[in-house]
Length: 277
Image 1 (cartoon, rainbow, N blue to C red):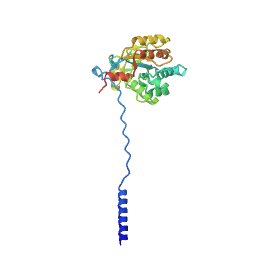
Image 2 (image 1 turned 45 degrees about the horizontal axis):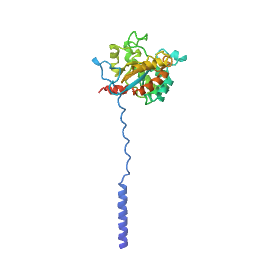
Image 3 (image 1 turned 90 degrees about the vertical axis):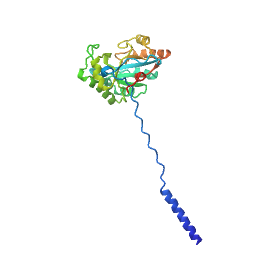
Image 4 (image 1 turned 90 degrees about the horizontal axis):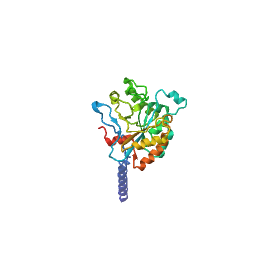
């Protein structure tokens, strides 16, 4: 009898254990956190009457920062010249900026991105650089702008949007909401035409003077004489039109660092001024 009771007790204990095991669930892995969206690039609030805002330089009193910007120019009508061997890119300049670890902003035309998609993608995915909009065709947005052809009024907005389309097709990630007018020429009508795009127009306060200049010392001296805290320097990223720029950069960068300057992107200067709510 005792033996039977012991057996019954053992069976009950085993049944209880099995039942308990059946109601125990293995630990579940936590869902991976939802990645936060990338921060929105800083932009300026619209100007008077809602016009596209214009940025020329950063704060003068918040440290010795300077933004080097490079215009990658190519017009819609220069395809034949590129096909015949003229170079509108400048890979050696980009390599030098990388070697010197210089943060910079490249204002690129959509036509340039179409002609050199691998380089556009490489620049756009390098954390040292940011890509901004320099129009699709490099046609002027006003009349009488250094002899450039003029974008018709009704096509100004679409010209900007077409450039962004070319960047994304080339593989440029997150092009910046900044626009540089071809030739630097703009007026109220141009600013009004671009208001729907939400861009901030970016000009400069230091002209590098490298367009068609062959002496790098001339370019370097002009930049070094003009830079102040918060400056935006305009240079070019085209071999045929700016042959001395890369050599000038090799002088400009170490000298400005010796003077205590730190190189930043345009977005960093705009962010120091204030961002759109």
